[in-house]
Length: 178
Image (cartoon, rainbow, N blue to C red; front, side, top):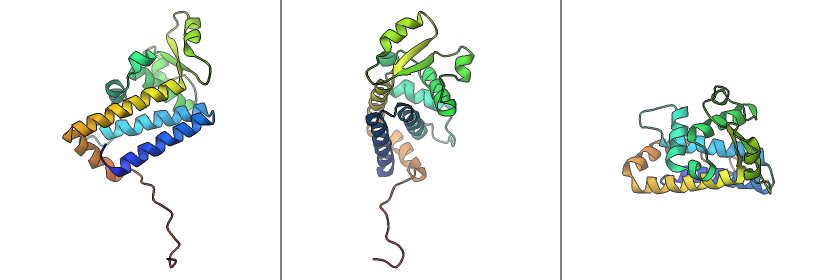
């Protein structure tokens, strides 16, 4: 993927998610996963579009993440889940209350979603394992990276947004110190 600043930002974000998962901080990891999807979907939004919107998140998920196959959810389901978690630390969101998406609940660690999903007995919801969502996100990142590498147009689009991405620089010595 083009742009060292972009690659570094994505790598740091992935490291932070792994750190949270390694320390069993599952909800912060989930928030970071959603934040990372927000970031990469902003990179891929159409040219000339200054603001990222719901449709950009959903389009990126649908195009690059195998959510339907691996998790049984759509990009819209995941966007609504993102809203619930990021804004209210809940599975509740406007789209879910309006009956437009599945409600997503979470498992982690040694708890598997299959028995929990069976217990829902046809309710419009599903359990997703946080670690599996992270794996699916990583697959999406790989697919996005491949798409950027193969498309000059996408390379230019991502490169055009590199200047807006926060960069991390090494600590500098205080003024007057060499």
